[in-house]
Image (cartoon, rainbow, N blue to C red; front, side, top):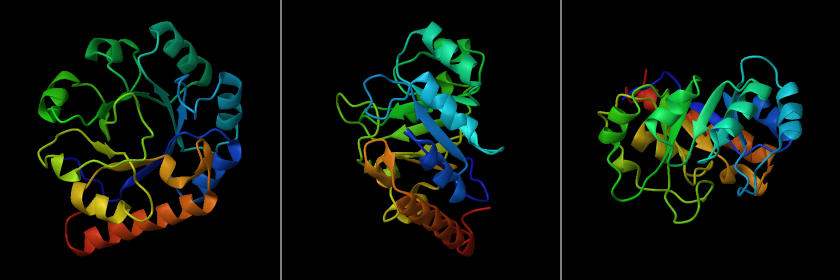
Length: 220
């Protein structure tokens, strides 16, 4: 498994520029902009452009899509110069690589998921984002899954998602040892409305988790 010297943090489902800037102030590495129409955190092009335009350099902007038309994904990615695609549906490996952009593949952790098979299929993805499975909901469930299901033999960077917040992220990092964590509902006041204090608490908890891992010799 790819283990970094520190755990990266992505705050997903950003809908307001002030929330993006609060995430940056807390030291997060990436923000996620959701373009899936059925999500309560969906943003349109103009709102996304405003958010992106206020970010300082070296913050990764991730566009989240779920089984959407290829031309729509390309248009949004081109207009916003997205740094990374997060393809969170049933997209095939061929479709994912067809965009010609770096991407991470979102995997909903059904009981029959075989992560070794997925790694063999998505050989060119930059990482696998592992999320809780809830029928009919493609993400942002606010629920966790058993982190022990993640094998230590994975070769791709693991981005851990699903029900994470400041209260459980230390345990999550200690158990799964991910490359990054992805948090949305765990830092919200309401769907799509983030809480700056919750974001800051989460960031501090991630740093504490890394400190504990380094002390125990499990990271770095």
